[in-house]
Image (cartoon, rainbow over the protein chains, first blue to last red):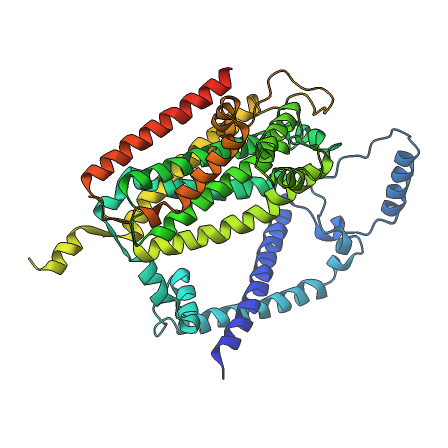
Length: 345
Length: 132
């Protein structure tokens, strides 16, 4: 006999029985009240042949615009008209069957309570759900060992000074950019005809659209500043020295990606500022000797900033750059975790 | 006191000690962002005139983080103005492969002064570009 099955079954019965018990109690209370009010059940529950006809009449009057309001319901009128109008309540069988049905269910309920309560003595000690989930996972994937080495890694006390959190703030702002960027992309339309209007729509119609855009805007600027501050901190403290060369190089790449995010994102509102700022910025790239024009045409998709430029910048901004920056960020973090924070002089 | 004990004393576990202090910083930033969002409900970021390729505005400016570079380009030859930042970026990228010697206090001071000077020049160029 497997206990879990029996348990589940008894829980279902328990639920059904509970409903039954509540029903029995309420109907009993109702009957008691009727008795106290001196209302005869047989009198009250007499089927009224005119009732249906009256209801039909008043419905007709309402639908044809007669203006005659329906009367408020009688306060002592029974709620369960379906049975009582038909006159079933006058017989003995209805209450008898009701008591038999719900009484049986109540007996089963009592039995189930007893069954469940009887195992209380030799129950397993209670374990929080989080612990149970982590144990379940650990039994399958041995997560505990990895997690404890990850979480319990000792952090030197000097690495808790405030200037060590600049890189972490940059990473957090990147996450914010990702979330707000996705929210903006739900409404933004990257065509020259629609881009401006869709941003106006975000600012004026979308719920908290202006907030989301402002957070995306300002945390983009914050990310550039924090990135630069982190670079300066690492440079001044000499944290780039061997064996951390690749940390530094990947970090510089991340700064370049951040600037590329800024460059491609700036064009998207498609207003005068955005348009001409992008024109100027791509012109700087065009001054590169020999391959300048090629770069310019590659960036603008033609000689001028057009709708194709907008499409390309949008694709770079939401598809290419995120993938690249997340990959390099992952490497950056893994390398930092492996080597730890540099000890200052 | 043994060596390992000494080492133990100078570190804290990442979780929960260090994690909680990082978490507090994150919450502080999040609060600032929420305030920005709340302010934006009254004063949104806004938009300028719609883009018009036939109408060039009087003062064209790139984003503020390219403004210093843009200002520099106005006063030095174009080719040099493009090559300099690219060479600069490449130099910065491979910097740890050039500067390999163990660090000293003196080097650190030189780097500090250099960084401050670079930042001041960059900020000055940016402000100049913004007001010009």
